[in-house]
Length: 168
Length: 122
Image (cartoon, rainbow over all chains, first blue to last red; front, side, top):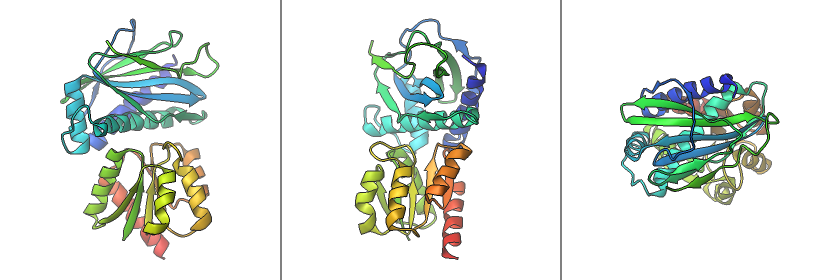
C-alpha cells in the first residue's frame, strides 16, 4: 500500500477527535496486520470506491466506544441502541471524509454510508489480496485502532470494497 | 427563524440543533435524507436549510438540484465531510450559498449561518 495513504488518516483522526470530542489522540506506529483474527467489540466500517478502493475500519473495545460516544453526543447511550451505532458511524464517516480530502487532489474517490458492527470480539473479513495497515491510537478514553485496507483501482485483482462481518 | 436540518445521522442533527439553540433558533424541522426533506420542505417553509451530502435514498446534491427548481432563494448551507475543492464547486454550482466541512466547531457553524443569512438578506 502506498504510504501516502496512511498520513491522511493519522491527520484526520487527530483532527476529528480534537475538534468534535476535545480528545487528543496519540498515534503509534502503523503496522501491517498479520492475521485476520477478531479485533474489537464495536467497529465503524466505510467502503471507498473510485480511483481508490477498499475498506476502512474504526474499531474499539466496548468501554472505549462508550466513553468516546458519550463525549461525542454529550450523553450516555446504550451500546445496543441505534443512536450509539449512528454516532460511531458518523465518527468513521468524518475520519474517512477528512482523509480522502488529503489524498484525492488528483483522484476521484467516493465513500459509502457507514456500517457499524456491535458484538463482542467480532472480526471483519477483508479481501486477502489487499494488505491491511493497522494504526494503533491512544486516548484518555482508552485505545482503539483504525484499519486501512485500500489500494488504487486497477492495482490488483479482487474487489477490495467488499467486506463481510463475522462474530466470534 | 425556521431551519431545516437534513442529515442521515441523528447524532449530527442533534449537534447542529444544539448549535442552532445556542444562537436562538428553536424552530427546527429534521429530515433524514433528500427524499424525506422534499416531502417536508414545502409545508415547513424554512428560512434556512442545512444539508449533508452523503445520504441514502437521495443525496444532498440531488436534493439541492431538485429543490432549486422550485425555490431559487431559500439559503442553503452544505454541511458535509466532502472537503475536496471540486466537491465545493459542484455544490455551489448546484445552488448552495455556503459550505461547512465536518468536523466543525460550534463557532464555525454559527458564523457560517450568520454570514449566509446576512449575505442573502442584503
